Length: 98
Image 1 (cartoon, rainbow, N blue to C red):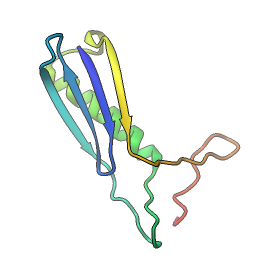
Image 2: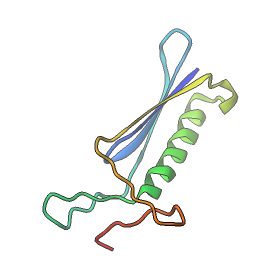
Image 3: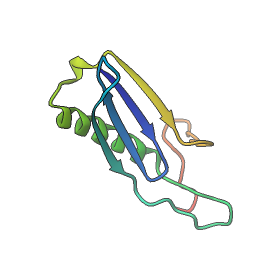
Image 4: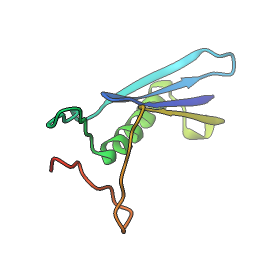
């Protein structure tokens, strides 16, 4: 099977596709709400994307009743124009509104 992961603005979705191209299972984990406290700004915590991805992967594997050993490949997509600024310790800076 192949695992697709899409990190969107409101949630992360994981999808398992079988060898014939059929969808075996899908699972979505919502993100924390996007913060838009300044004009033309939208912020989310990058750590929440990771947590949601882990949850969605675990959820889709459980829904399909398979283990990670069945996954032959992974495809990943993410939200457009996502910028994560790191400090000198490689930790995410922000959100700026904190």
